[in-house]
Length: 368
Image (cartoon, rainbow, N blue to C red; front, side, top):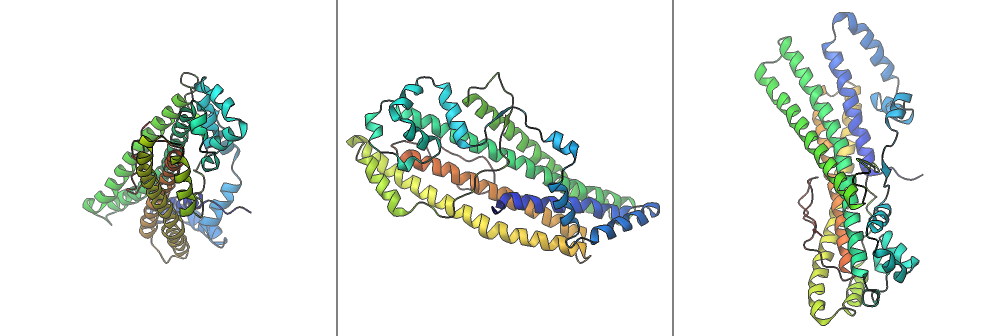
């Protein structure tokens, strides 16, 4: 069985926290007439080994008919980078002749991102090769950005739900005199901040999807696309230094003398960006996010056992949301860096390389 993707798994744990929080609020604020009902419901939850976490997993595996209807896809499906590349090529009709000269096997290598397997002499022998590759670069990057933005919206929504739950609890505590208005202000500000973050994320998702729609020649035909919920997994191992140096030497042997020095400098920068992005993505997945997932899961278990407060759970839910967003950002950075590297290894010249500043803000990738 395929191991669940790390960002998907962290999203499930984040949802666990969001699910538990409203139940906690009900427990702490329910009037006497509702308290007995709540207690019976909570005892039923306790029958599961991991309490609310097990219920959430069952609900995810058995969606209601309403949820299934809401999940029906709308718009043109672009499930992979390969689909994006091939659709982008169709917009440029002149590239059909270039593809014919490349041959189906080489075209397949480009579409699926296996550029290192190409014969570097194709750049010299096939007129229009550079444009074919550049359009593929644009499509790959636009697709990565759109999928990333979609993921971030989902996690910002979960973060807002947790903040809203905290603020509601704060308001009720003020009402019954357990808190002052000053104590409630920080959680109200946290909700406002989360709501602003979600609005920004939704705008970024709409803009990135609009850019992809335009690139694929679907402007005026589609207002939205059906994209996957997550980016592809980052490979466990990076391309070896020996293979990278071999590819660098091979392409430089096909370039005019004036371009060889430029490509040499670009290759060095592209390799550095690629290696750093890969290392950061692995650390985020294998260390930071893994440990954060463990802390979140233990917090949920301790909450179910009444060893943690709802505030502990809310804090950890926010921490998990940030860790997940950062992990998505490192994934995105890797695929942008990998695309730039492969392009440089075929003689391309990006204007700039990915900035590994961390987080899920839009990267300063090469503009084409």
